[in-house]
Image 1 (spheres, rainbow, N blue to C red):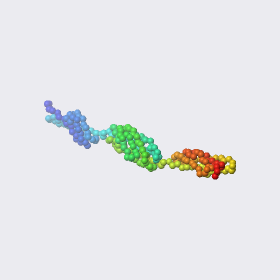
Image 2: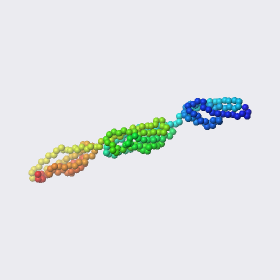
Image 3: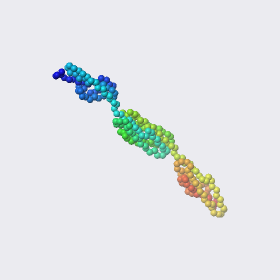
Image 4: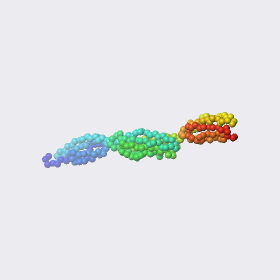
Length: 238
């Protein structure tokens, strides 16, 4: 009717969460929803004589969520006991979902280190294994990537460290024996060659000696493989 005041209001009829209206007393308003799902909102208009209402159906979708992507999915390190630690490897972390992905990266083994400890995807992290003090064995650990709000947090990446035994050299000689022949008062017999090889692993540093005054081996030290001169002197007094 002429001269009457029109009053409008918004209310939630149904829905899984709460609804906050920006201007609940206005026909045009914004609405904030506490959770996703289907809602029914009602606008009611009335004056001193008449009242009417209309319902509005609203579907609120879930907020965009990040998802952690990692490459590689596992790490393997190999080193030799007493030797140098293996080279560090790279962990690439990406966001295969939506929104922004903030990650924290940790490890669960004393010999394992990940740096830096956090970042925003996409990001690269250094994964290192330190074999100091470790004996020959196989060690296992994990790198853990946790993401704020990520759909698949945490992602656990297995790490294997194999520490192999230190190399062990083994002496190989050829020939296994020597025989010299000379004539009394004559010339010394021709010297012969002793070949020394390493039939094991690692590096073989050797020393050679003899136990007879008429016998000489030169040189008396070296690194395999090497050929040594073995000589017999028949002029030496026995």
